[in-house]
Length: 205
Image (cartoon, rainbow, N blue to C red):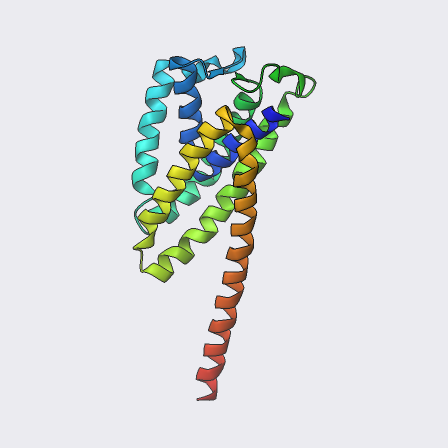
């Protein structure tokens, strides 16, 4: 099941930043022995692919740290991040890493399953990120956007590396994501009740 955790971590990372997990796999496959990409995914280690991913990453990092622009970027990334998540899960779960020596056995009969799984995981994380960002921007007058974006990028980098080197720790990330989801939903519910109470008080006056 380690390959599943590797794929899950990479797909979740793509939900935060589409290009970090793909670039991480490409760099590690090209310059280290930490991951051995299977035949169908060797293109991730190509020099041109790595260069293109690096350029796209720079654009994404800059755009995601500017209020309003980050919202437009999230709309565009609604397609890009799930797609990257599918690629990341497919490549990561079928790669030989320092902790997985026989990755082909788990998905040998249904090669499309890891890609679809990755799309769904990345899409879920993307939706949570996209829903949280407007709240952060509104409550901090836009000041929190670059801070939140930097934290998301850092989390994506760490999660990508951890998913490959020590995938068991992906469970901790998933637990943290669930806790954040409950906190976020509760926070939104509280703010909604506060707005309704303020509106009702205004009508009474």
